[in-house]
Length: 448
Ligand code: 4AD
Ligand code: MG
Image (cartoon, rainbow, N blue to C red; front, side, top):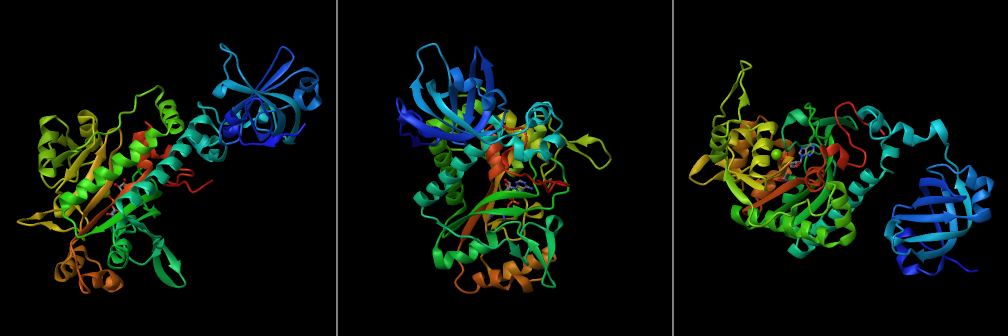
C-alpha cells in the first residue's frame, strides 16, 4: 500500500490515510501485548500503536526512549473516552529503528530529570531542549520573533543587520567583551543602536534582531552574557510618540502570538493553566522616575546603604533590580518608568528641555522580570554630543561616524532595545531568562 511521508503536525489532515512518519521515541509503554510510542518530531507528538506480531519483534521489545524510528500505518481518530495527543493515533503496520539510543541506566532522562541540579541540567542543555517545557519555550520564542517582524512591517520599519564586531561602546566600558581584531582592540557589540541611528537618513525607521554581549559581573536571574536584542530607531518623532510606538509594538506583537491557537496552548501549558497569562492593556502606566522614588519609600521598599544598613531611596539612585521588581510586582502591570537623571543613564540620551538634569528616557517594566526595554530620545546637537563624550571620558575619535549624523542633517530621533529573553520570561512565567535562551551564556558558562 502506498503511504504519504508526513510530519506529525500534518496528521490531522491525514486521518483515515496511510502515512509514514519519522521521529524520536518521546514516551514508551508496553501494555497488554501492545507497544505504545509517543513519537516526537519537533512539529508535534503522535501516539503510535504497535500490536500483534509487530510488537513482539526484537526491535519493538528492545526499543528505547529517544531512539529514532520510522513508522507506517493509518491515522485513526480515537473514540470518545480514549485520549492521545490531538485525539488520534497511528495504527502501525510496519516500523523500523533508524538510530538506537542507549536505554537503561544510560537513558539521558535519568540524568536530566527535573530534580537534577542546575549545573547538570546546564551541561545537558542539548538534551534538555528535547523536553516538553524547554521545547515549548523555544517554539513560542520562534513565534514571538516572527510576530515582531510582522509588527515592524505593519509599522513601516525596515530590518537591517548591523555588525557584531565593533570598536565603540554604547552602554559603558565595564560590560565590554574585548578581543583582538587583527592586532587592534575590538569588542562584541553591546547594542546596535549607534548603527541603527546611521540608517535613518538612508532607510528611514529601522529595526534589527541581533545578539548583544555584556560582560555582566552580576549573577542574577535576568542577566545573560549574550542575549537576543530587538532594537529600533525612529526619526522625526517626540518622546511621547516613542512611548506610544513601544506600547503599540508590544501589544500588537503579543496579541498576534495569542491569536495562534497552537501557540496559545503552549503558553497556557507553561503557565500551568488556561488563561493565567494576562495580555497587557493599553495605555501602559507612565511613572516619572522621581515619583517612583517616592512610591518606593511610601511602600517601605528600601535600598542597601553603604554602611550595610538598608535605608530609603533618594533621588539620584539607580533603582536596583530587587526594588524595581518588587514595585512592578505590586503594581502588577506594565510600567513605563520615564525621565531618569542624566548621571545614571547613557551619554547619548537627550535632556528634558527646561529640566536638564533629567533625560528623555524610558524603561519598560514588567511583572516578574522588571526592565525589559530601555530606550530614549537621542542628543541631536553636535556640540552637546561632543561635550557628552568628554563627560563620559571616551575618546570621540572612534565615534566619528556616529558624530557625523549630527553634522550632515541632524534630526530629532529616538529608539530602544528590548531583551527578547526577558520578554519571554514575563510571557511564559519563567523564573530566569536562562530558560528562554537556546544555549544561554552567563558568567562561567560558554558551553554547550
Ligand atoms: O537598557 P539597555 O542597556 O539599552 C541599550 O542597550 C540601548 N542602547 C538600546 C537602544 O536604545 N537601542 O538594554 C536594552 C535591553 C534591556 O532593557 C534588557 O531587556 C536587555 O536589553 N538586556 C539584557 N538582557 C539579558 N541579559 C543582559 N545582560 C541584558 N542587558 C540588557
Ligand atoms: Mg537599561
